[in-house]
Structure formats: C-alpha cells, structure tokens
Image 1 (spheres, helix red, strand yellow):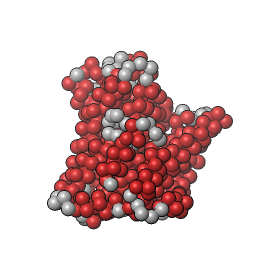
Image 2 (tube, helix red, strand yellow):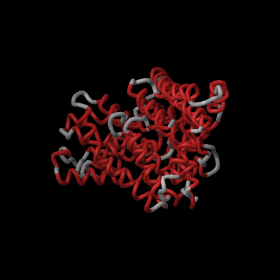
Image 3 (spheres, rainbow, N blue to C red):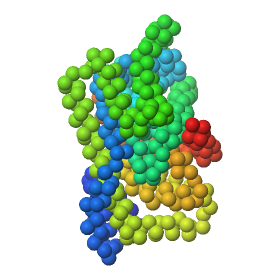
Image 4 (tube, helix red, strand yellow):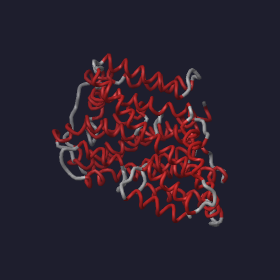
Length: 426
C-alpha cells in the first residue's frame, strides 16, 4: 500500500490536479481498494472535525495582514530603507532583497506572499542597475522562504495544530534559526559577489544622514512584529487574537501611508479568501487521507518499515530527511507537511526527538522545496514578476541558498539548542 499511495500521489500531481483534490482522490482510492470498511461514511465527520478549530482562524488573519502590507505600499518604503543600509556590501541591492524578505517574513507568515512582495518591488531595480538576473532573482526566491520559519508562520501554526504542539513555543524555536539563515544568505551572497563582482552590479553609497533618516520607514514593521509576537509571549493574546490585532495595526500603518482605499481593501479581501480556501482544502483533504490511511493500516506499515530498518535513531532521522528532500521536489510544501506529519512525527517522537525541534527541522526542509524544481513555488512566483529571462535562471540563482539550508539542517542536528534555547528560556 505504501508504494501504491506514493505512486498515485506523484502521478496525480503530474496531471496538474489541485493538491487538495489529489488528497481526496487518494483517500477514496484507499477506501475502495485497501479497506474492508466503508471509510467514506466518515467523510462528513472528518471535514467537520478538521475545520472546527479556533486555532485555524489565525491563518486568514495572518494572510490578510500580509495582503494589507503589500497592497498598502509598506513594502516599497521598507525596501528603499534597506537599500540605503546594505548597498555598500558586495552584492549591493541583493542584500536589500534578503533584508526586506526577512522583515516581511516577520509579519506575513507566508513564503509565497513574501517572495511575491519583494519580487514586485525589486525586479525593476535589477533591470535598471544591471544586476545578474540569476543571483538577483534567486536571492528573492530564497529570502521568501523565511516566511514559513520566522514567526508568525502559517506552516508552524499548521504543524502545531496537527501535532498538538505549543504554537508559541514553535514560534520561539523558529526565530533564531530563521535569523541565522537570513544572515547566512547575505554572507554567501557577499562571498559570491566578492569572488565575481560583476554579479552584484555597481556599488552605491549613501550618507549616514540618509541612512538614519530612512530608519523611520522600518519602525512600523518592527513595531508590528513586536506587538504581534510580544502579545503572545506576554500572555495578553492567543496566536489567533494576536493575528487579529496585527491586522488592525497593519490597517493603521497602511492608512498612515495613504495606501488605504476601497480598491485596495477589495483586492486584499479577495487575496485572503483565495489563499485561505486553498490552505483549508489541503488541510481537510489531508485529514481525510490520513484518516483512510490510518484505518487501512498504512501508518502501521510505515512505522514497521522504519522501526524494522535496523537503523539507529540518528540513522532513522537521516532517512526521514532524505525522504523530505526527495518528496520536496514533487510536492508543494503545505501539502507535504500535512500528508506526512501524522505518520512521521509520532515515529520521531517515539525515538526521543523533541517535537518542537523536529518541527523547526521540518520547516527548513520544506523551505528547500520552495526553491527546488520542478514544483518550487517561489521560483514560479519570482519568474512571474520578471519581464524577461527563463525559469532556469531563477533555479540556478537559488542553488547557493539551497546549500545554506542544508547546512542549517546539519547545524540543527549538531546543536539542537539553536531551536530549543528560546522555548526553554521563556
């Protein structure tokens, strides 16, 4: 049954069928061919139980928060400010791409939304200033992946919901690795452009007065992050309530920048509905698939396969990492998470691995799926914002950042405290 489900999943995805529908089809297939019981009769209860959770209300709120910031003109001001601070480094404006992506990751909770935001603002600058299109676009795609690691993260909310793990602890655990990856992205960019300066475009400098005066453009984003995350850890609000507060603050910021009008609000609402509907369809489909797999015994098969492999706990961990890397080539990140979490996480927890730590490790692995072909969503988002060039250029430009992610996986294994220090301290 394991191979049948795996081949069926990959086969249906190659037909470009929406992922949520694929998960339902696989569930129906398992019901028909591998179960002696009519599992489809439980569909109504599964749909209700998987969507009837107050925790999931945080998802549309965080999506709406990001939509308001993007359409309210906050992204352009943030990008211009970071340009003044980072343009002297080898790679120049490429660092502003990563810096802006990092700051928006701390507010939007979505990697695709972050990549789309930065790409829309940055791409005209690349063409005007003569940057290498591969490195420039690859950095945007990679920087966007931080949106699901740096809190607040929609994917961490989903992980916490599916594994019954504390979402505030997951947010804390993702902060240090996320910031370290942002620094590592900038470091490898500087190293590449130091060896080959032509990739980084012409260097520009600004006066200290211009830099300091530009900091006021960063204050709203920083204040928003402090309020959203701080209210959770101060005990004033749940993640869902803090998301609602964040939406209100984002509206005030956009209003202060003169970016609020009926057209902007309409597009923000429509974008939120589209993204939330997609996420919920995937979650509900994954719940139904997991229900049918568990009822048909697939979970026991996979557990037996891993436990009887003769591998040590560390060897099993490396096997799971390899599994996520391979599946990440073909499956969208959220779908990959919800389809595997109910099976993999109990096994890893049974081997003694902390669920909070493993959640961060998993997020880094699925981040790689966002910038590795053929299904790397961020690659397509960035390419869609370009006026010329090929998707292959974006793929090549993202490869150095894939190596950084692999290095972060290694560091998390060697130094679990990178993820567990803040949750333990706070």
